[in-house]
Image (cartoon, rainbow, N blue to C red; front, top):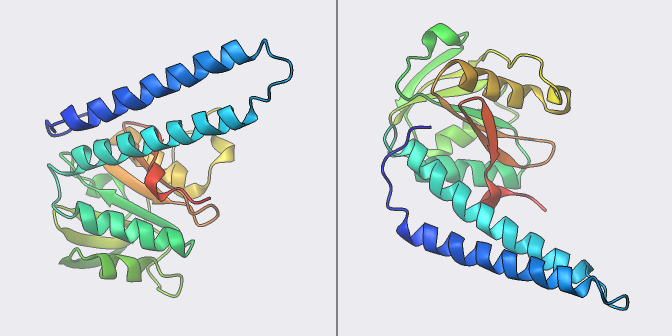
Length: 206
């Protein structure tokens, strides 16, 4: 994966502290297993919360690093995902990086407008005729909407994910694009890059 050389020092220190905390709590759990009168469920919950917190820090940091060389609209993109997630609206947003994407997608409707979060949100409103498909972002502009992406090949477990996620993975397998995907069923956001899907944990719905 290629991303700008971000200053990871503060993030690394936070992740180190969180991981050390996880190690300590897991060692305590191992010791407490010998006590038949002690219930470990609360400690498991504490471990889960610490892990989710660490994952949120890492996913936010790396997502910004992957995007920042190619668009200045990270805040607009993340605000769009947050607002759509709250309303359980699905979304599929492609950020073009080095490889031109026109040969890989079935073009939809030309937009050619400056990227703003309210325009992007309006496209994915279920009442919009453009909501069913992918938006293509190049630099700081919305190039087109309602694009059709290549689906990922059938893989073990692929039947468990929806069409948006298969499309996100499919394009990321064939290019260096970063694809943001939001599930309308769960309200959870992910990003696909290099044929792998990663949760954007700070948008996770409970």
